[in-house]
Image (cartoon, rainbow, N blue to C red; front, side, top):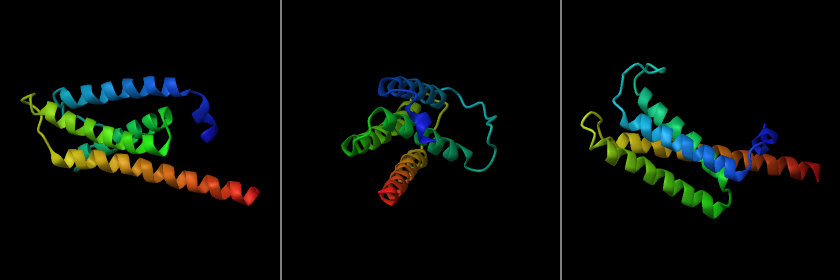
Length: 129
């Protein structure tokens, strides 16, 4: 799996991140049509967490030192808050602290998953040595 992550370089991941961030912002600011692919209670929270999981992945691939990971987490959370602030000006979208919490869950789920995968890779490397 990880061998495929090196197909794109850091700059390409940055471009992909910005395209995805613009798409997420666009989807967050247009009127909600109500016909989601996922149709269950709190599906929008699942979509928030999923979007921020993907954004975290892309931003992490674009810059991966531990200091940058922390900066990225804070920046993505600020992006989620900005989305909620912008939604307050639309008149057809509601501001929700639960959405920001769902964004944070997506960010943290990625970081936990990534840290666990790094841990497994290190274990595997130690077994080979």
